[in-house]
Amino acid sequence: MITGLSKTVERRDLLRQRIDALEGSLMNSGMLLRSETEPLAAAELRETVKRIIGRTGGELQSSQNLSAVDEAGFKRVAIRIAFKGTVQELKPLLYELEAQRPYLFVDTLEIKARKARRRAQASEAAAQAPSLLARLDLYGYILAEAGP
Image (cartoon, rainbow, N blue to C red; front, top):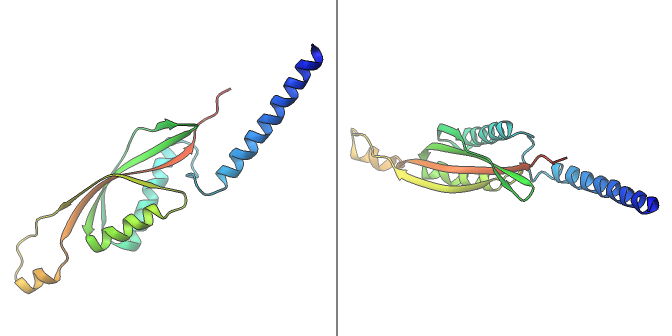
């Protein structure tokens, strides 16, 4: 009986080592957000958005943390952003967000055309791209905390 318990403990320890190795390789794969906590992961998402908007143009008007959701051993961390810009600025923003490592996902995209202000000349109005207000939810994943 003691021999059986000893083998069970050895198997458990071996499985724990394998799980730790798999979690380590997953963390180093670049698929998950680097942050370990929900607030830090949300801040990481926000900084990623700011960096991309800095390259693609437009303006980040606001951002808001959303509730994290447990999904099969992971936590889905999300933010809601409001972006002001043109179609020419929104298209590369969306592409870069979804082509990122770590993997990021755009959800609940809402785009509204903004009314143009009075312009001095019709030719000037034709030359300017229409302004948009886009709201979207962006999420990525972190590992959920392991239980005892």
